[in-house]
Length: 113
Image (tube, rainbow, N blue to C red):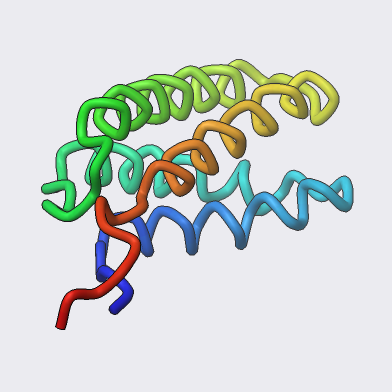
């Protein structure tokens, strides 16, 4: 059973809809949706981590980092950073998100039902 974590899904949706264009050199989507990404990161950080995930503390720490990075990224965008200046930050943000995803594994790999 795949755990439904609404805030993770919603953050991921905005992230993938903005990150993939950026990989192609199109930063317009992230520039126009950065407030939305900040909002989703905040909601993600404040949401209840599903109980079956083993690494609660690591997930929490990475979510804090993710929210912080997203806010810092917005600051950069608002200050008029070039696409080139945004590139590394967006990569780092994406990496942090994948770190969270990697930690989202259930404690028990086999089902006892």
